[in-house]
Length: 229
Image 1 (cartoon, rainbow, N blue to C red):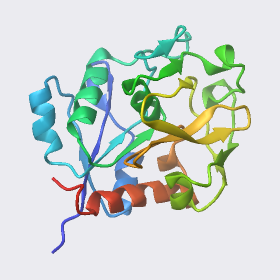
Image 2 (cartoon, rainbow, N blue to C red; image 1 turned 180 degrees about the vertical axis):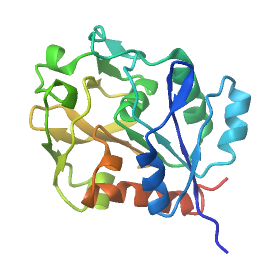
Image 3 (cartoon, one colour; image 1 turned 90 degrees about the horizontal axis):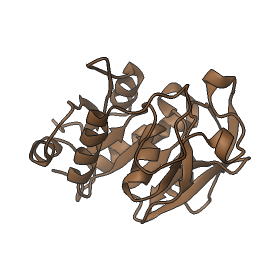
Image 4 (cartoon, rainbow, N blue to C red; image 1 turned 90 degrees about the vertical axis):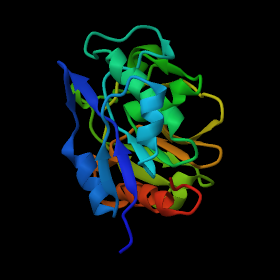
């Protein structure tokens, strides 16, 4: 019997407890992957050993990014716990050539880890539209680059997405390129130049239709020879 690709999913830390929206787990399982919830790790050695169990990784949504931060976080966005920040860095670096999907915080984290900058509050700093549902935003359209992995996966140049972020990518980290933007110019997706890492600002696990193909794509890539443990 063929084994399902093992897809790690990072977690948030709230009041000393790890938390994860179950929709991430459900999306991975529905796509044919085996969800593996990550513990918070403290050492590169532990991360390397845990990464050896995985075929791919999802960096889930979370609170405010502090690395690469431009300006200050607003009062309505708590900063990421330093323990999660460290653990996310360790597992990302340990994953080597295996595929990753960064979602919301996850996309911003990938960019910051590559040396890019992150607006603390895109609405205030970049004169962007409201992109946070908590601030009254609703769905909005993004436009996807034709020569991107995102376009190949979603098979569309336009997509209506949910809106759950206050921060935004200000400038790209090394080895990354923009693959989608909102009408106000906010970066809504990016990918590594080799296509291994895909990041989206929206939450596909909360959507139906085309967006769910991102999980199927991650599972498929994690199944391919060359990405395995």
